[in-house]
Amino acid sequence: MHSPIRLTRDGAIATLLIDNPARRNAMARAMWAAVPALVAAAVADPAIAVLRLAGSGGHFCGGADIAEFGAAYADAAAIADSNRLIREAIEAIAACPKPSIATIRGACVGGGVAMALACDLRLAADDARFAVTPVRLGLTYSHADTRRLVLAVGANRAKEMLFSARAVEAQEAARIGLVDRLWDAAGFEDEAARYLAAIAATSRPALRGVKAMVDAIAAGAAEETPALAALFAEPFAGEDFQEGYRAFLEKRPARFSAP
Image (tube, rainbow, N blue to C red; front, side, top):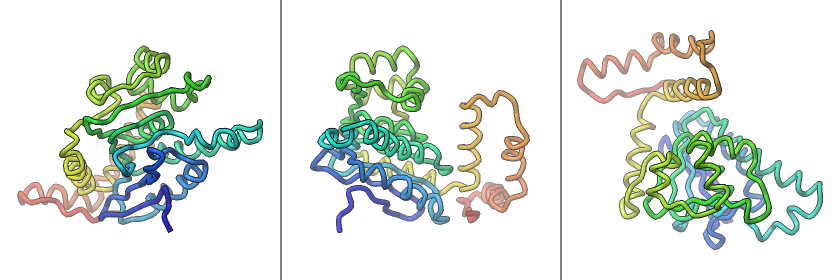
């Protein structure tokens, strides 16, 4: 049975695949509801090093499915429930302790931008375009989603994107910090696959530690706490450090094995 959102695995990379191409990968309520469990499955799987978010059919995500809005926002209870489903999905991605990377082609709109911003990195093809459009619906972007947009592009650019609701082309998105890497659409899948594989081949405990360290600093940890000190100190006693420095001395690729 076809599922419009599902988790696939390819070696050490799990892909949260949005597969609703007839709707430009718009997210129905049931799709939002499925996200936390899918992310949790990737987190729990020791074989997975990296979580990738992707869309099928040439688009990343067209945002929440507007065809459902009549029922999804029919009354106060429905509004609260719909917003909860979306919030929990996006926060599940943001809270993933493993590196999360969005690979973006075509349309990335509204809630799609929110999901991409919840990832650690955004890789885009040069045919990608981004728009944050709540003002066209008489709405305001949520605090969490706006905060991530501001952190990515700065307050003034965030306001400009939100005020105008215009489409931001891939080259501009890369220039303003919305996108971290940009490749030609013709070679995008191969380039992204190589990039993801290189990350997945590194030490998994180190990847999680680096993410936790950067996230703590971004959240305001100006001084080193005991937990952050341990993040730095403990890996020196780990098996991956032993393998890493031996591989360096022996001039060979490291074969990391710690889960």
